Length: 141
Image 1 (tube, rainbow, N blue to C red):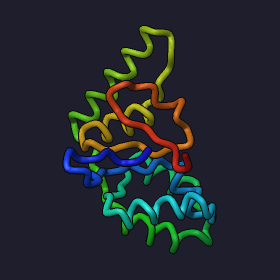
Image 2 (image 1 turned 120 degrees about the horizontal axis):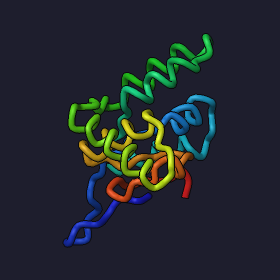
Image 3 (image 1 turned 60 degrees about the vertical axis):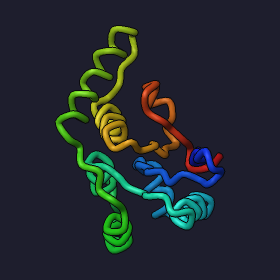
Image 4 (image 1 turned 90 degrees about the horizontal axis):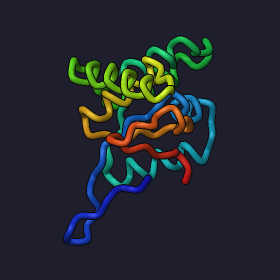
């Protein structure tokens, strides 16, 4: 999942879209995930999320997590799901349906949003994102 290198040997800065699995793992205290996120920030990378992930986190939030969730979401870039991203999501769904595979709307929208913003999706659900034109990584290599 590491960032690419520039021709002069310096590390390129990347944008990462954190999927719900990663947000929840961090909120629930999974130290290895938190370390990875802090490493990415320390290296100057941008961390963001999408409307789908915000909705999923809000749906499953525990009352005692409200303050931590708000603090986390306030610190992340919000990557808007544009019309282009929505069109891309529909095309992903249609393409994979023709192949006999279901892509859920949420995964399609996350992937479309990541593609539009040039972001790498960080998720534990790599299998939900079979799209070849979007980079995917696990939170822990």
